[in-house]
Amino acid sequence: MPSPRLTSLSRGSGCGCKLPAADLHALLGDLELPRDERVLVGIETGDDAAVIRLSDELALVQTIDFFTPIVDDPHAFGAIAAANALSDVYAMGGTPLSALSILAFPLERLGSEILKSILDGALRVLNEAETPLVGGHSIEDPEPKFGLAVTGTIDPDHMLANSGARDGDALVLTKPLGTGAIATMAKHGEVSPELLAQAIEVMSTLNRSAGSRALEAGAHAAADVTGFGLLGHLHAIARESGLCAEVRAEAVPALPGVKQLLAREEAISGGTRRVADWAATFTNFNPDVADWQRWLLADATTSGGLIVAVPAGRASEIPGQVFGRLVSGPAGIINVS
Ligand code: CO
Ligand code: CO
Image (cartoon, rainbow, N blue to C red; front, side):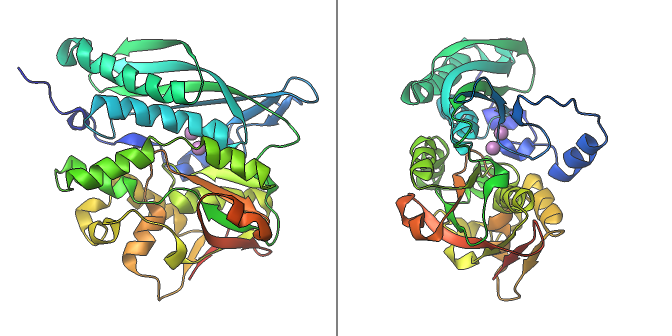
């Protein structure tokens, strides 16, 4: 009997299956979180990873990311999941040290070849990142899920935390948007193999050089674009830095073909709709901004690029596109024109 398509085994896919940010935030606000002065970046700021001080010059970066299949190709799924998990370390300005895998898999139904292929894809990306896989945990589950817990190191004086951005910083995005829409339509069998291959390439590309170039350019803050869309992750930087963001929709890079896809209802996933609803509470759109661009900015992304806040004069040192800036104004508000 042929194996079912990987993406047919789950309802959500990739980072689109994240719990809604607004609900998580409200819930965390009700909990009493322990204080520890060694924790330099913790749960409260919506950062990509936690940072724990070990000495004056050295801190640990810790993060975990896992999700259901975003594509049917198991090797690509493993590669994307690995690039996505490593990305949170790069987004803090850190260097990954080691990784543990987290796996849920219907072994009897799908067979060991598919599992081997997922792990193989992840290992290819981990090798590229010079990060050893040192262990993991796996369970039997009808809905496949895969990801990594990554530990890294960082210089505590050179972190790209959400709260570090300054008035006047330029905003750079290092990968084009639209992978959420492409993956959603691929699930319906409605994108060309070329477009899907392009999206897979973007999602499995490491944010390693983007992170190191951001540090070298004197960047103040960074976050990777994942399930909360460009608007959600930019909101966290603006809010935590006490600034307001200005975005030029025309300047936001998109994968080719995404404009046409986003004209169709079916391309907009439940995850993207949730982001758009939430983002409406802190985003003002100029009436000229086209509908497809509004959806693009909310696209629930998997393994997206870094949003980097960098002194305007040095923005060109980062491989990517300048799409806006941070200015003084109501914290966390985003004005899109
Ligand atoms: Co992240
Ligand atoms: Co993450």
